[in-house]
Image 1 (cartoon, one colour):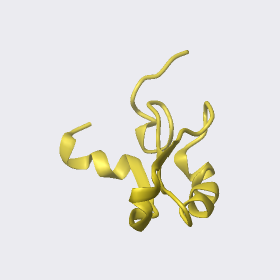
Image 2 (image 1 turned 30 degrees about the vertical axis):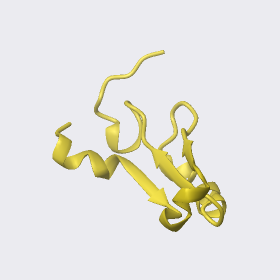
Image 3 (image 1 turned 90 degrees about the vertical axis):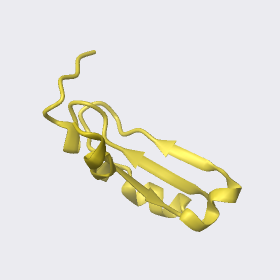
Length: 67
């Protein structure tokens, strides 16, 4: 993974609410960030929310990850 492509591994919603705080959503094991996006959009009404893919999941599925 190169630094120039890091933005493809997370989604930020609610930018205008950054002053209210930032929440980081981590999807459960085996799940991509898309599974938490509906919740992120609801929370974005009040907060800035960052949903990201963890190694071994979603856009980072080729990055090794073990428990």
